[in-house]
Structures are given as C-alpha cells and as structure tokens.
Image (cartoon, rainbow, N blue to C red):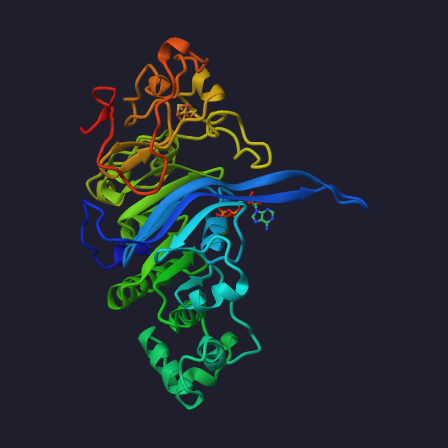
Amino acid sequence: MTTEPVDELKPHPETSSLTGTPILEVEDLKMYFPVKSSGFLRRTIGHVQAVDGVSFQVRSGSSLGLVGESGCGKSTTGRLITRLYEPTAGRIEFDGRDIANLSERELHPLRRDIQMIFQDPYTSLNPRHTVGAIVGAPLAIHKVVPKDKILARVQELLEIVGLNPEHYNRYPHEFSGGQRQRIGIARALTLQPKLLVADEPVSALDVSIQAQVVNLLQDLQREFNIAFLFVAHDLAIVRHFCPEIAVMYLGKIVEIGDRETLYARPNHPYTQALLSAVPDVKQAKVGGRRERIRLEGDLPSPINPPSGCRFRTRCPIAQDICARVEPPLLQVGPTHKVACHFPGEVGKHPEKPITPRLLGVDDSGMPDLAAGPATDLPTGPGYSDTWFDLEHNTMGRA
Ligand SMILES: Nc1ncnc2c1ncn2[C@@H]1O[C@H](COP(=O)(O)OP(=O)(O)OP(=O)(O)O)[C@@H](O)[C@H]1O
Ligand code: SF4
Ligand SMILES: [Mg+2]
C-alpha cells in the first residue's frame, strides 16, 4: 500500500493572519507569447495570453502557493519572476526594486537572490557534470568563495540537503530521483537566496519520497528564512507548505487568501471544484468527504479566451453578466480576494450579482447610467484594511 505523502509531512504552525514584509510584489503582470503563422513570412497572428494581469505578494521567509490546472500559467509566472522571461507588461518588485525590465547585466547580481527549483530532476541536471561541478558552478560564476574553498562549501551544502558529502564527484545518473532533486535544491541554495521559485518540486518524485523532500524544503525555509513561490498540482501539499494560496485559471488569479479561509470557505466556483476533487484528509479521517463538483469541458484556449469571466464556459452558476463583464479580484475578507460576480460558499452563492454597483452596470452586465460610474476598486497586490462586506453588500470594513 502506498502511503499518502501528506500523512508523513511534519506539522506546520497554523497561521490565521499573514504578516511580514513582502520581499516580492507583483502587479498586473502579463506575458503574451506571440503566435506566428506558418510559411515564409511568419507573421504574428495572435498571442497566447499565458499570464494576464496577475498581482500578488510573497512575504519574507513565507510561502505563496500557486495552484490551477495544467496550462493556466503557473510556470510562466515563476519564470517571469526569475526573469527567465521578460514580461509583456507589469511590475515585479523584488526587495524594493522593480526588476521587470532590467537587462541581463543589471540582473546578474540579483540572480544570487532569486533561484529556481525545477520539476524534473532528470532533465534539470547536466548529465556530463559531476555533482560537485553542478552545485559549485554558481559559486564560481558569482565569485563568492575563493576557488580553494568551493569544494568544502559544496560538501557542506550536500550535507545540508541530506546527501553524502563524499559523493561530490559522482554523476547525476548515479542518484535516485529523490536524491537528484536534493542536488537541485543544493544548487538553488548555493548562493543563499532570499526567494526560491519551486515549480512542482516534488511532482516527478515517487509518492513515498515526496514528503521527505517537502519536509527538507520546510526545514531549509525555517533555517535560512527563504521565501517561496511554490507551484504545485497537489493541493494537500500546497496546503501544508503555504500559509497563503493563489488559484489561477487561464492566466488570471481567481481567488487568493490565507490557507484556512481558502480551504475551509472557498468562494469561487473554480476553487470549489478543484478542492472537491481532493479527499479532505481531516474530514476523511472522521468519515466525511466533500461532495465532488465536476467541471464540464476542457480549459479554453488562452489565445482566444472567453469574454467576461474566463471561467464562464465551465461554471455551473454562470449568468448573463459573466459573459459581458470581467469580475474584479475583489477583497471580501481581511486576507481573502475573489474574482466572481456571485461569490459565496458552496450552495450559498447570491442570486443576484454583487458587482453591478461597483462596475456601473445592471444585473445582466449592460451599462447602467443610473448605477453611477464604476467605483475605483483597489486592484493592487496585498490586502487593504477595508473590503467588500458580502453580508451587507457594501464596501467597508466588516
Ligand atoms: N514559450 C512559450 N511560447 C508559447 N506559449 C507558451 C510558452 N510557454 C508556455 N506557453 C503557453 O502558456 C500557457 C501557460 O503555460 P504554463 O507552462 O505557464 O502553464 P502551467 O500552469 O505551468 O501548466 P502545467 O501545470 O502543465 O505545468 C499554456 O497555454 C502554454 O501552452
Ligand atoms: S463570474 Fe460568473 S462565470 Fe465567473 S465564476 Fe463567477 S459565476 Fe462563474
Ligand atoms: Mg508548469
């Protein structure tokens, strides 16, 4: 019998509030990949809107989880933050400095502070280099340690990630998948980064070793105060690792909030469907299970996304307004935002949309002069101390 990784994870402290200064702040980030025609001229005939207006913060020493179906833009977001891509638009403020449009030369010193752990430990390590060369390379490139001290530092790092320090002259193929991922983690740690982008760091690993690697990451985070952007499919692991979680759908964040609220009281129909597919560990132990909400159809194309709310073609409660107007990512609690015209807990979605007065439209989404101009809604990253009170249907502090 396989053991569920979540059973073997170390306990984490419960967090009801999100505190700490942001080390990373991302605002209205966009990445549109050009789609070219075939043939000689190869004209641009459209764009893949892989990431389309995403805003969030990652607090120093904390972790933000990024979840959503395959193709929703999680890896692209991670690659933008590590500046493997230059964004089409938006702000990426790292440690107080906008790095969105820095040149490669300007980025060089920052590369020490932001590192990435990749999904596949089989392809992310050069098979022709020894472990010592792989883990030591960043030290040599950034000239942070004298040459004769590199080996000692590499051995220290191997020990930190639970590998035998004497194995520095072995090649990646001599290690198991879990060990290779530890090598990737050691390489990411070499320069003592402040932020780690972990893109599905355990999904290529055997279930039996996933927990060990997650526990290692958690220990490292505590010891070295590293902030994480943690991309993962496995909602149980994200829940364990991240005090704050963002749910993406077709290039946009549809819901973001603190772990407790997001898992216990998701307000977006998409989050509700995602969570209903995961057996709830705590509930399962007492014999309970969430009722499964099945999503119809496939993820639409990000080249030509649906009008209004991008989720409307699969949403079980969509109405006319959803096709006409895009719902804003509205703060509905102290640390909770949701992008839906009908936000509410499962089975408790309001009958009428809550957004018309804010957007200057009527209940079907048509412009409504009587409704007055649209309210200036805060759309930036982070949380404000005023929010939309769903109970009383007004903007204000609950
Ligand atoms: N370099 C690229 N050129 C063109 N399109 C791209 C490129 N990289 C990603 N895309 C497209 O952008 C969208 C988002 O891709 P991304 O890899 O970010 O998704 P993801 O959420 O990480 O998915 P997965 O869970 O499968 O890893 C997809 O439609 C993908 O096909
Ligand atoms: S805005 Fe409409 S389509 Fe989008 S999630 Fe909410 S109810 Fe569904
Ligand atoms: Mg990905």
